[in-house]
Length: 200
Length: 175
Image (tube, rainbow over all chains, first blue to last red; front, side, top):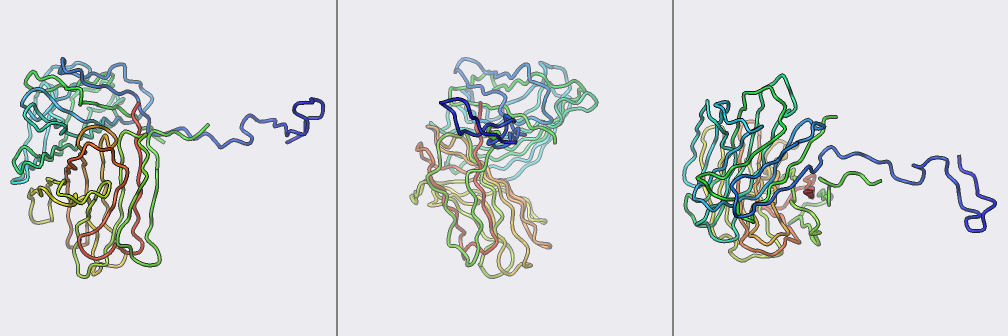
């Protein structure tokens, strides 16, 4: 119901609303939210997302990655678990051949691609990592990723990779470590952003 | 209060009336972290199968593009690459004119750190099933430029983009 203010000299004639929402667009909460972003420092090979909130259904990490070492693949751990609780598969192409591989009873999951110390400057690996139903306490956790590097070299340094991973734990995920291989450090061109996806 | 702005549509184009030589998004704001281009495409190119979809950024037509990809076509799995191209190839595929009338190919391209100071890397995923032919493909592409992307031009390697095709540009903003 709208009434007109009659007594104030400042606001005479202005409509008066009984609802705080009147005249405004309805608020629609986002189902895809940014949780945190982390950037490499050049002196550490681990980027950690900790105290991950429980209010989402799935998580997604999107990121650019460059390491100071010479290994193109980085790994992931959940909740600081270094037990032999991980398994992985991948489909890998380098412009010349396509290969498939898998492994289990691992202490980590190989999950992403980064450029390395000898990659041309300003070229980075890119990654999309999906962690499904991360808060479940009745399911083992499944991860999938899509990653790649292209450096126009025409060599096998360019690669596109799709991966799946399994963490054999029914614990809710509260921490994710993204670890450069071969004791490398994440350069300052490395940025990982963590997003939460809500269930309807 | 506005709707959440982490993953939001920036612009959409649907081809109507007559086919289009290209679909272009210009004056792209630099306020996001990544861009996502979602495409449902059909081509006027005659024949069956699909035709390659190209990107050009900021009207750059120099040989600054390269890509590496994997694909399966129902018979063969393989990997191949392009180097020093004038277009960024295999950003998508478009169903050709000889396929059943309602078949459009789905492609999605992720452009990372598009406004940042590194060279620009793109991941694209292509799902093209033509009921007897088709591809599933994953591609990584590179534009060797440290300039912020302000325009994206989408073309096909033959024919025009057919009526009914649609492309939507999304922005994703990190914390």
